[in-house]
Length: 207
Image (cartoon, rainbow, N blue to C red; front, side, top):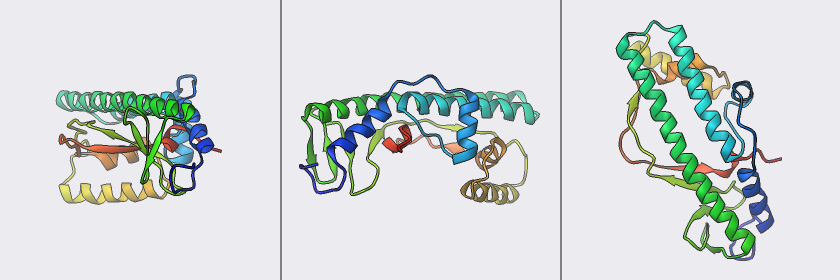
């Protein structure tokens, strides 16, 4: 790329954006669980990976409901948890697709510009392009507050120990609905405004 001092080429950017925006069939729960089990993350085009996360959240909530005896209040909380995460993912998908589309158009039409470590489309949509790192876009203003109920009813000290163990299992590659649920029990998604970054690598499995 001639308009910036880094190692990612125009063609590489174009290819990554094409992969991120390519048309795909909707995910199946079998595909989602296979990726989570094998890789611990979900990767694919923008129109696959966000629906895949929504499908995984739906599946997780269903399995939690089947595993734990829930009061009516806990049922309400867990459904709110599911709906809130779904809305966050929908907004993140909307932003990601719009930004990736604008950036792809700019690269194809050669109307982008580079300032520092950012590549800009004419409408000021931008993404980070830093050295050999995977380019990534910011997703802003995705905000909500929700809690997954404390289903185990353990004292806070014991719950925190189990959550630490669950987090270590996740880092070690031991994945599963109950591990995810355990790590989230009694925790809230904060209601303050947060900016998140989304990697194009999260939307496209690059070979």
